[in-house]
Length: 138
Image 1 (cartoon, one colour):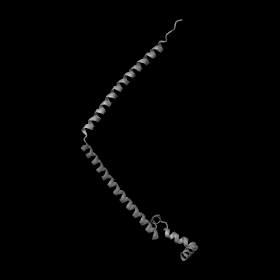
Image 2: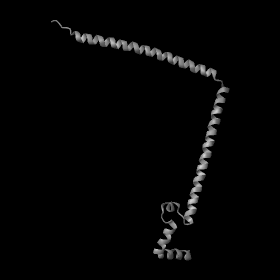
Image 3: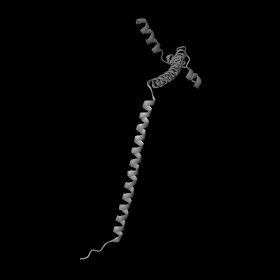
Image 4: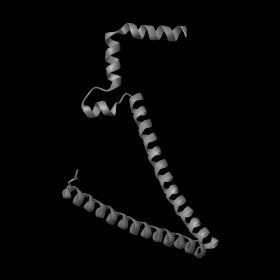
């Protein structure tokens, strides 16, 4: 029996083998480049460690801390200012409501809260009687 060779398959296998060899060569080159880059990085790190003395490092850290604290101080002052203004605004609103004014209602053209309460009590006087009787017994 004689076996017949399929030259298409042989050619495809040969091409695939050549492509694999080229890829392996490229990977070896990339690996060499990577190892070289790692060596260079390690050398650069060692050079930096030698070049940076403790005094220089302490000076840079001190400067960074000082700048950070200045930025923190400014942000803290701004936060205190905003909180103070917000607190005053709330007290103003509470005072206005206690005095019978309701800024939101007035701005919207609605009756102030105090006026609404007065109207309700006019319609339901029994509530005022209950309140007064609790004051008298309390």
